[in-house]
Length: 220
Image (cartoon, rainbow, N blue to C red; front, side):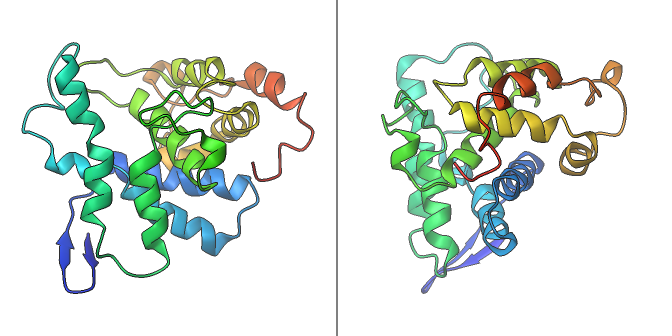
């Protein structure tokens, strides 16, 4: 991907994982009632959320096992590095992309990387944050195994009220439990024994979170 700035052209490598985060963020936004054109901008911004990792020391992200404290601080810096890389970007997407870089590790209760509460940030950041977490969980990393969709959904459900708002968690679980929509996003076409999206995923969790929130179809 090439982004044209004021006088700079930045060449950025976009991974399949980043593209998935973009597609999922767009789908969450649409489910929240965001207009399609705006959801499309969110998709582009979300795709750029992790570009700062390209400026981290080689091998840091592929280290097996737990990071040392100083290494974790280096990893946290990818949020700010990404924002710096987009400093000369122009157009309506710039602010979205910069905020997505900076704040996609923030939590609803303010206990994320930089201590910001999601409610105090641009509304679309929460869509990028939850999409990034789910995608990371179902992706193999040097330091973790691939989680099944069921396990990832259970994690999202368990973090409702802390990492994510109850309403966002409910909406997200409803989205990923829709087989046709999830298949379009993730390319899942087979059943759960193949590590793909099962029909039963999150049905109980979705009902649990949506029932107390009759206005869950609205934007958060």
